[in-house]
Image (cartoon, rainbow, N blue to C red):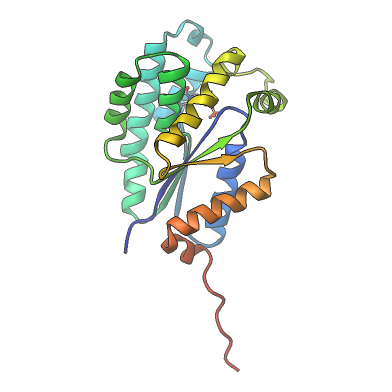
Length: 227
Ligand code: TMP
């Protein structure tokens, strides 16, 4: 039996990816499909500490782009080896809310670090554990910004990345579109302006056509009834 897929979700803040991650996870869990649901940065005890440092710790205002990229990669190296590879070996589907493409886009393009070096760092952290399929939820920057600002957080404080200027997010959106054009088989660009239901259906159809084995586990044929 072939192993079940590793699927990642990407996009700018406010693109709706976390909703779609949750809906896909619910569909698979309700069907009894074994699943690891995770996120980046984070997903391990070490990674969650790194997440706090990157996003909310006041000391991070002084963080250089080089430190930032290394922290994202540190969180990723831990997640791949501690959680993702063992889960795939145990026959689970793995879904991650963000993964290495975020670093290529945010640090390699929007932060203007050397894209080749960022690529090498990604390869070090990921090894051979690249996702089988990546969904990029594509929304125009003003829509994403408006959704992001409406988000309710306990402290109602935007995290460090959410305080970047509009140009940063324009670069992020453009870089995701370029990534999808460069790797059209793995990276699936989805129009994030559609309704939540329409996006969910489109994502599931793409998964089902690429991974029929997973589709048969999640959508089994109705059993025939014998009188
Ligand atoms: P989110 O989990 O709410 O999407 O927030 C994660 C933030 O971290 C988001 O602003 C994107 C950013 N990020 C990077 O800049 N590089 C990365 O490699 C990852 C995983 C996230």
